Length: 289
Ligand code: GLN
Image: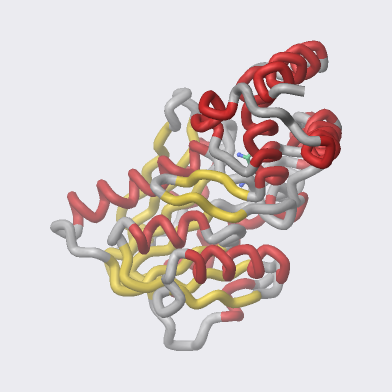
């Protein structure tokens, strides 16, 4: 079969299977099969797909139709300016989480006169997305990144190496009490986290693509989704330098609960909740006295 015809017939197949952007997905799957970038496909539109490639394409299509996120199939996903390796051990980086970096950047501009943070902490680093973006965008000089999952840390480590940032990031495996992983005198100018915050009830209603393929431990935040957020808000003031800040991604329904939780603790001088681009509460920021 000719490449263009393969894209057309796959587009029809994926459209019929209910995918929202069947042509883009078809192009990506065919491009992946041929080992080219999607935008380069038109150069190859007349080439013949060899039998071995056709076999490979149908196995990729089978995975996609079974609901596996395209990013896992491709093995990579964009985050800010970076292209990160991902697999089913880590969440696919979300556009909302990219916005957390914007909030850190504006805090650094407005409250620190543009001075980057010497040492930060990332709780639940997953693929390392937040930690790597903060370093590569010169917002932070070095960062300790912890995660419960050994396989997630493996993904983060390969991203750290691929970006040549080995000297700037310390990856540590932690237990359920992640604060216990830190040395008694370790303090940070900034703590960031995209913790698991999905409630038990919401978890069952997530799209299959998320629920059946993404790591549950990175999503499930307990009955009200706030288990880890409570741990963060309780422990962060002791680990932040004066005027240091905690930036946490939260669920759309958690804005007022997280605001009250942080507001009740007078170790914070300032507490704010910010919305994402869809106008849903998405980030909580607290600044230590
Ligand atoms: N935003 C993710 C979702 O919609 C949840 C990520 C998280 O729990 N940190 O599934």
